[in-house]
Image 1: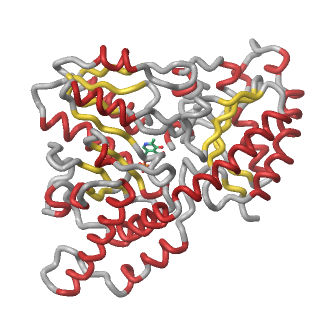
Image 2 (image 1 turned 90 degrees about the vertical axis):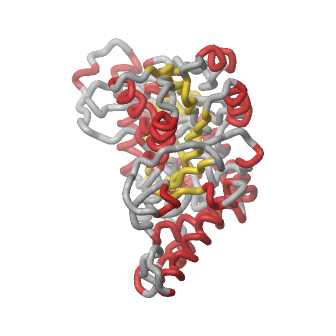
Amino acid sequence: MKPVYVDNNATTQVAHEVVEAMLPYFTEQYGNPGSMHTFGGEVMHAVDHARQQVADLLGAESPTEVVFNSCGTESDNTAIMGTLLSYPEKKHIVTTKVEHHAVLSFCETLERRGYSVTYLGVDAAGMIGFDELAAAITEETAIVSIMWANNETGVVFPVEQIAELVHESGCIFHTDAVQIVGKLPMSVKDTKIDLLSLSGHKLHAPKGIGALYIRRGARVRPMMIGGHQERGRRAGTESVTNIVGMGKAAELAQEKIEQEQTYVQGLRDKLQAGILATCPNARVNGDIDWRLPNTANISFEFVEGEAILLLLNEHGICASSGSACTSGSLEPSHVLRAMGVPFTAAHGSIRFSLSRYNTEAEIDFILEKLPPIITRLRALSPFGRDEQADRSKLDYGVGMTTPGDL
Ligand code: PLP
């Protein structure tokens, strides 16, 4: 059975055009782009072409501002650590409570290494406040790292304005744009963004490839030290096939970005409206207007998100939940918690994230299967009748990757 895949913020299907573009670099053009001979030089051309394709998607001034690496996590870690190493006299970082763990866990590690971090809160819609941000920046602040779009709720921060504010105070501004690149148009050269993270597998390229945009002149010490690849900014022989794939994926995204955005948003809105019309006590989490076109995070009160997912899975529907059970602690998502979403709603939240490959028939299928699942679980759930019921009796997997990690 072909899955009905609505978990595209976790990862995406690799576009067949991307696979085709990559294939020759496995079997025919397998040279090392760093080699002196023509065979390797041709491969370097392919890498440069991909760099240009990614720079075009971002609206960067120059392709040299794009540094390929292994993933979004590496980009986030490098942006923060590379900046701190460039400004050793500054020991303070500003970020938000709703970042991906690629930023949050890294910042927590930095705190243990003697840095100080301010985590900005968000309001009920998942938005940060400019006054709080301005107040958090001090003489000690080296870098402000604020995501462009949230992976769980799809909430989009006004990052261009945030970057202006941060620049006025003389700090470096980094944005984790992993979820927005390829989904909404951007022109980074017209902003004050210094550093921007992106990841191939979120935009129909393979897993294991990412990039960090480094505005010309921004000082970022490398994390990987070795050869001179990527102009000395990221050592290690280039993952040519993946780079070529990421370039092609960027080109495809750019070609049809507005058309796709309209298409995907139409599907998402139909799904959301259908759910709200058929499932009582359902609510959308996150700002309705400032949101990625592909994402709907919906809470079904008094029902466990994991139970919904398991029953959806029986129909081949792949979504993800907003509660976290990595440690068996049943802690709800840090993002929903920061937004003040009530416990009973945060635990029953499901993220639907769509892509260009979803169809209207799939949305109809979800709308047929989901409402009876919610009715069934509500009837069974002790929480539907008594929210104080003993949660420890429920059996949860330990060590699962949670939606907050994806
Ligand atoms: N940042 C955000 C917002 C993400 O959603 C993700 C992945 O889910 C990452 C960073 C990490 O990206 P990668 O999986 O490429 O390391």
